[in-house]
Image (cartoon, rainbow, N blue to C red):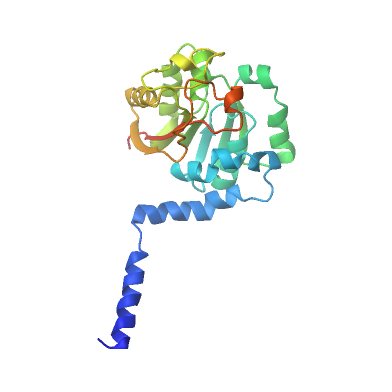
Length: 258
């Protein structure tokens, strides 16, 4: 075999090995064109970027397929760490609903929310001060709805969590995505560790899957990107022993049938 043929075969081999599955290429494109730019945006507050190492937002938002032009709601958005990232991802043609309820404001006040949204710095964000029992979204108006580290709170805040999940289902367009990230509880514990405000603030992943499927959602993805196998699931995520340590968190993507 002459040198010319050897070089040609080598080039073909390298080209083929570099090829990705179309879905992988799509996800990579989403990350580089939107999510990565949002995470690296120069205007992000320092307090936010300091949390990135634990929260891994690029992996989270890529997994939930956040794209330019999306209409996204974030439930119990708190001070808006993810709201700001979502705002950058969806761009001028998109919209982000930053929902918080009165119980959150009673506990934290709305100072952080006011600072986040001051001077119209995130013009595509709508402050959505609504109760979980009456979210007020129009039917089939959202592309994505996120519950990031907050689903467990629903179980001590409200009596009927299934009604909140049903609202989420109705508000999503056919094919829309519901994204859930939460602190993992001991397997088989259901919502037991989520139902007490002074409890562990954790929830069982399999219980969440069952609840969402009963509401009509299809499990579309299950990621271990935030898994921490050495986490002590018998302790609250805010306990002194876990200070500075990431909890074992599950990440689930559900889809409303088209």
